[in-house]
Image (cartoon, rainbow, N blue to C red; front, side, top):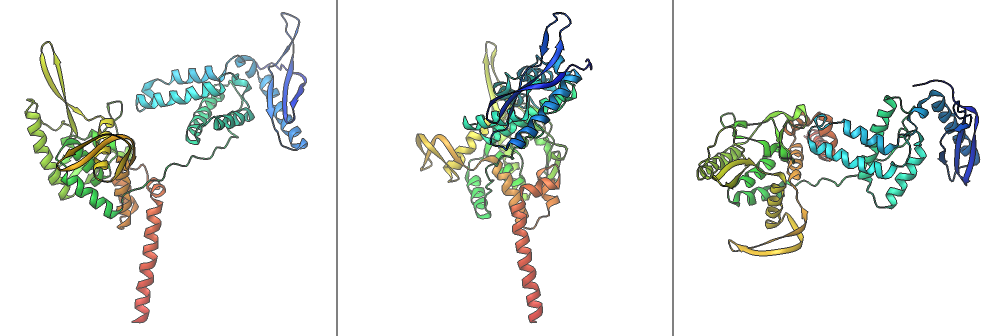
Length: 427
């Protein structure tokens, strides 16, 4: 990269309209053509600000641009657009660099947003004000704050890569501060609701998906962790369950989410008995297909039957996450923990009417994980124990997610102490 000074003079400014300026610099004569060369134009938006503030912003922007031009960076990367650089960034990050192909595909979605929003702008011409205006337009078009925040995080990462590669001097995303999106508040079951949910689950015919739901409720597992469990992960003698893998949405067994997610937790006697019954039932089901059950057999299993010219074959498979979610929604609707806005089918089973449909609202599998944590904290379990049981990366994660339950415990502790010293003073 050349460092020869390129700029001649102090640059020229053109006011497009009130608060909007374009500026460029004379780069001297081209030695081949003998004609003067000019930098590409940049635009500065500072509408609604005082004249003094506008002039200060303009001076700063032009000084930074001049520094880039004199460094040779703009000249060497001036024809590279944001879209092209984002595409190159993504293509170089092969799927092996991600925990799963789904993460790679998720980044691809953000890259598409970046290409659509910033693609026409040259990498060296992108300015913080451009980003602010493009984000404002995206909001007007209906882009959610969560999607915008994710896109911004990815753009900042890409542009920092350009800084590291000495293609631009500064990351134009640095001054941009977007508020973190507010996510839907988690709504765990109350103790009474959890008790009723358990009662409904015990009345459900023994099956793989019912067993998976029982594991979510009793152990606070993530869905992928539950789907990845095999019988070798259960120690019936010690009453423990070990998490060492997860079954992801791309139908692949992968390591757990984090180092702390690899854990061994206690299970209660009731769950151990339930699992023992399901193990016997599952073995009988597999035997009908001449399949064996061993330590590598998924606890939450499916049976895939394939017919070819050579005959019909059956194999044991892990239950797909989306398939499990459908069963879970139906179970919740059947038992009053959810509803469908669009009913497509009604039928009778065991003297009870059931409905199926679309537009589900209600309890989701992950809420059972929050239920376990919230109820444990409510019963006085310490944060370290809850963190270890749920497999959070650190106690601070548990503290931030379940602060509401911890605050409620603090209130109970204050009231209990007040009652204690009141009794002592009255005795």
